Length: 60
Image 1 (tube, helix red, strand yellow):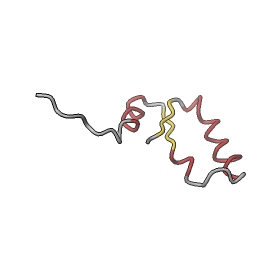
Image 2: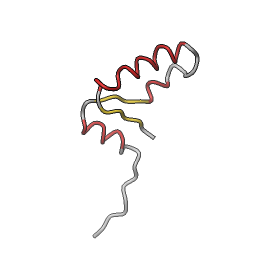
Image 3: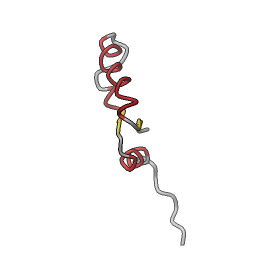
Image 4: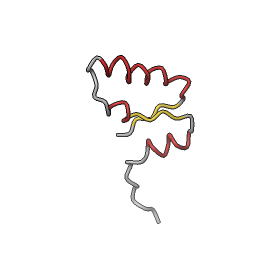
C-alpha cells in the first residue's frame, strides 16, 4: 500500500527524524523511509495513492 504524506513543510521533520535517529537506533531498515513519499503536489499524491487500486468493472 503506498504511503503519501502531503506537505513538505509539515512532514519533512518527521522524515529527517526517521532517516536519522530512528534509523541509527536500528529501529528501521535503510530502505524503510523510501517507502513513504512526501509531496506538495495533490495530483501526484492522488496518483501514487491510487496506483495499486484495480479499476472497477466498466459500466455501459
